[in-house]
Length: 320
Length: 112
Image (cartoon, rainbow over all chains, first blue to last red; front, top):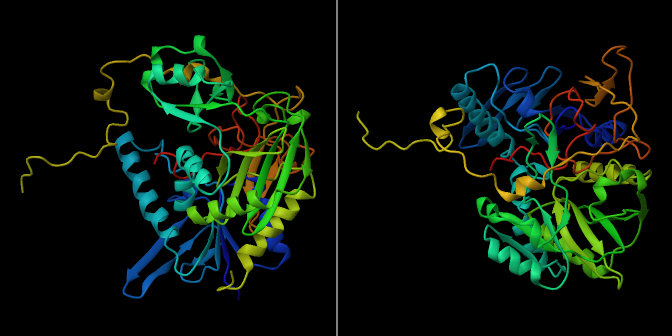
């Protein structure tokens, strides 16, 4: 029997399902679970380490996984390891950490296994300052950006030519005092919006790119899927899905080369790049989500991306 | 053996009242929080359940009342996606204030 592909993802993830459908059609065995949600109540782990390396098994309610016989790992968006509500807080925190460093460590150490993407490479690649610095080093154009907790620095940055945008360094799940989920969309700010409480956290300010469109480029190995996002009436296109249309376009060779170099520097196979397209045709890098979604594009783009991911997960070992 | 200066785990204080001595003003960025905007043309929120197909290992989406299969949000272009609408997984879409679909950025290592 063929070695299975391990799929690490939360249960509610249509993006994962598209890849699983593709693998199923190719008769590739798969094992799927969600470590943060399923362990330790629903899955059992026994991993052995000695001079020969890592061996052992994981059992889910529906599968047995031999840890030394995993052909590839598709790492999507698993549930974070969270303290259980069924233990006292201290015990729950301890148990969650043991799961993260135990099961999470085992899943990061599968011998000879191809990862799309390795979870620790994903972790590294999620830091926006590192994203921007790496993009610039790879020859991509980036917006002027400031990360600060100094009000004077923020004011000075706003005074520079061009409009200024505020966006979070990380999207933290956040509930308001009224119990409503809240988030921060990228939006314009000005001097009068700021106050001394800027000192209380790191904040990211960025010069707004005057754009004619946004482009989301999904890269899977050397396969490039640049999708022009038309119709966003304002800065953050994620607010306007209903008015958006998608168009598969070509990316300039220099941008493709920059993205490929970027992925290599982070050790990534997959990346979802966001660019602004300027009127003169310049592509300006905003960020790269190493685990971005793509299932919401119009057909046939999702199927093409799912197929490209399945190609990578099932390619013979040793191929590049 | 007595260890006079044993290291203290940095994260042990979760839930400890000792960490709540003083409240500082909230950092400015929190004042920029905004609601999630529904992308469903005002149609009613649709709760759903998901379970694992034991053969294909895909998610099977059902109506929690009728148990009939429904289509997953964001799976096809005709549905309303929620990419990058970062919200925490609350399990089977039970939070009516939460957009359908899954976040783009919540990961296994968000606390690192």
